[in-house]
Length: 214
Image 1 (spheres, rainbow, N blue to C red):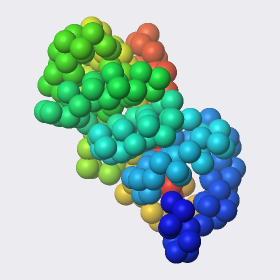
Image 2 (cartoon, rainbow, N blue to C red; image 1 turned 60 degrees about the vertical axis):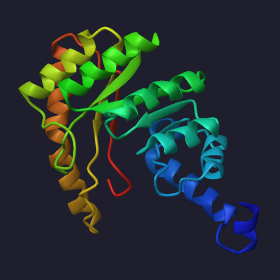
Image 3 (cartoon, rainbow, N blue to C red; image 1 turned 30 degrees about the vertical axis):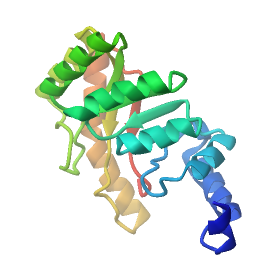
Image 4 (tube, rainbow, N blue to C red; image 1 turned 135 degrees about the vertical axis):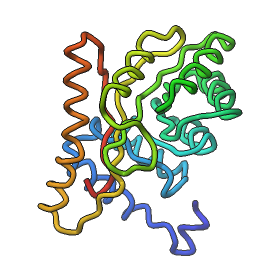
């Protein structure tokens, strides 16, 4: 980092100002879960921690490891772990016991595989149902099948429900009012699902939603 600062490619004061601004936009550090994929830099994670941000998102196991090693207490793997990544996910949990790791899922097969791995590791896994709010890249559309999967997470031994994850990265309308309208339309079915889950007597501990534009 020092070399990058000397080369003029990293400006800590500007980064800190950006952090302060995003906290102001969100209404507080506790409402933020910034993604590390754009910088992949432990020093920036530490700066965010100094400003009271404690929850982070990442796309890969390597990013999750970097974030935990920087001292993050809460890390969400926002890419469904499959195959060997499941074992690596539990290895991370073992290596960084002070960090609460979670992962998104949208498949009953993956939920079952993670539950088996949890039993073998002696550790539980916090899983978030990935809900497709219009981006059509990952996740399951709100509805009966999504409800079934959420109930499955809640009832499966070895896993716990962290809540819902709904990323609307497809919304980047430059006009703020139009962007807000698109965001509200995309989130309405997610909110309806939250209401249905609560009505069914199931917990929704948290919701991770939105990206930088929304």
